[in-house]
Image (cartoon, rainbow, N blue to C red):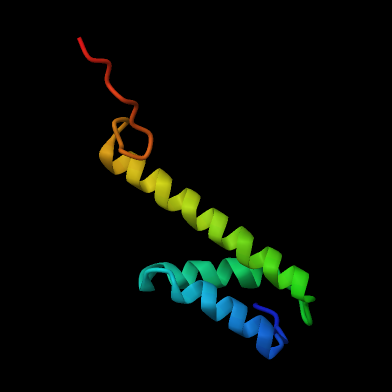
Length: 84
């Protein structure tokens, strides 16, 4: 069972602003990760840290997924070929 959170207006704006920049299908996982790292009445620093953790995990997940789909020659990790 999920616990209730009491966010201030500024904290809620921070979470909303971070989520707004994500693809719609990524927002649910992002918000769940943020909530998993917060308890009751969190401080501004705790909310900021939770948002950063959630964004870091999302970026890592997307990078791994793209690498698996494209293989080792993914543009994210591709090295420049030496000219003969």
